[in-house]
Image 1 (tube, one colour):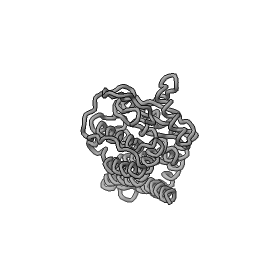
Image 2 (cartoon, one colour):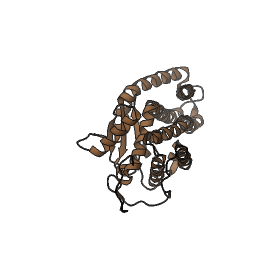
Image 3 (tube, one colour):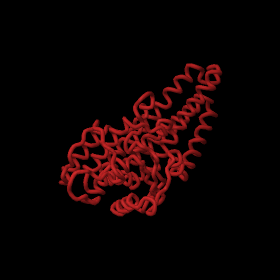
Image 4 (cartoon, one colour):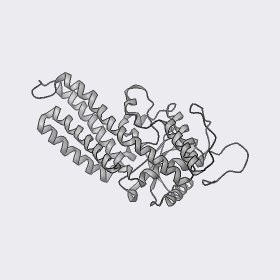
Length: 315
């Protein structure tokens, strides 16, 4: 049922793309839009990981350049029953992460330098497990294709605004129609993105928490990332808001019209679901962390200054 719903939503996104093409160029415009959508999906299928990783300036790391990070990903991938994904770092102060790739055999996990520096090892494990859950659920290709089509709809709507205003109502949308097109088409794409991504975030939280066996590690990480996302801007995400749903937490600042692309469920609701899962699994809840608290800079694995021996990723 989940796959059927996803297929219907993707069909709706493609239909919206064709509708924009029809408003701009009539029946021929709709056919051209359909061809473009098919070509875009085909191109994205083979190049989704490279497209998004290049957009965010991510560089690949290995055991020689980031041994602890790569080792942690390898251990979690083994627990999840997944092939080892490629690991990338983004030189970005905002703590965040996403996964991409057309299938588990060709997947990649990308984390920001801010995430590695500000989260503890346990919290980082929770975030990586969440991204591996997306890979296991085959969400990564879907999310990248959705981002690509949604971005194309926005560009096509702007194209219609630029050219449509110089045509009469018999050959194009006209200036009023063009303005409505520019506003409503991206809004429709955003609604489809929301429908696709919200349930998948909850599912990835659940499976990711089960992979590490400690739901509160992920809950603590979500709260920290949410607080930082409103304080530290991710300028590349602001320039490409249609990709925001790929991240574990919405990377947009929420200022201006970009917040229309906020496709994530409430962090408070996600944390509440993880609290419930922790109770079901009988795990000990971690101390609550305030969403607006300012967190001091940490080392690459978030070593605390509190006394006592440091724990490994599994307690």
